[in-house]
Amino acid sequence: MRKWGWLLAAGLLLGACSNEDKPPVTSSESVSQPSADDKQSQHEINEEFKESAEEITFDDAKSGDVEEGDHVKVTGQVSDPSALGEFTLVAEEDGEFSVTNLDTTDTDIQDGDQVTVYGTFGGEGDDGTMSLNATVIEKQ
Picture (cartoon, one colour):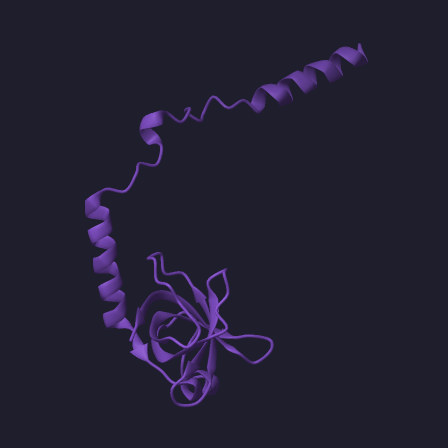
């Protein structure tokens, strides 16, 4: 009798775990390929981002005047670019930023290039470096 009670309880628990509430995903709900309009809108988004970015110096970042996530603009020289899209940006005035390139265009960044980076401030790393997440990079 006890066996049947356990089996009944297990059956009820398993029955409560059904997926009937969730409709299956159909092909019409899948992600579609971007259209030509989407590419133009990305350009517009980049332009708006550039307009909202505030030009900062290394001293601004180091002193805490810039908050993590702020839209920023920094101009400088590229140093030590990696294949992973990371490089050091030697700011024109006073310091270095560690940059992660999130720019989806085919910007070919080479050592010594003069660039303007538009992105979000990533804060100060454990080693004291200031980081930027680059959304748009323009060669000078």
